[in-house]
Length: 213
Image (cartoon, rainbow, N blue to C red; front, top):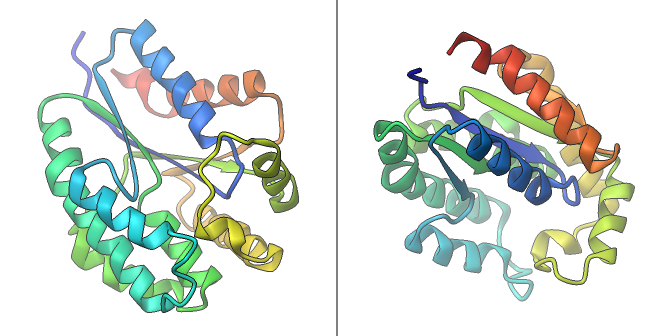
């Protein structure tokens, strides 16, 4: 059976469990013999990974908010044209850890630049390419940050140094964009056990997208 390659993004605040759930989605696609690619933002390719290092370096506390937004957009552009689009053209479903929604909420609302302003920057970068489906892992910021503190193996980056007020704004931003685009963005309660979160993700995949292929 032929399947249309899908562009699926996973979004969520810090400690929402994106890495764990992406691993479980990988197993799902393998079990169903669906060709796929897992990638991330910022990163996924050499140029974007170098930009990621600059953005997330804990020493770069003086970075201007607009500089940060532009760097994310630059990394996104290169990643899109070098990795995402070619993979889709080859018939691979792409599962991407973060995409443009992250910039809208982290820089737009969290940094106070404005979601519309950040959207304008990213329109230039993505040329209207949006995901077919976004799974938003929603969790209370206090719970998410406590998970991070308990995980000694996780990368510690500049975003982890932000205040709880910042992370609350991020969650608020995600909820706003989910309300604006409910057909694409599906909100999943990430406070539940990994097994229950996985079950809900698969239900959304099968009911919202995969049932027609």
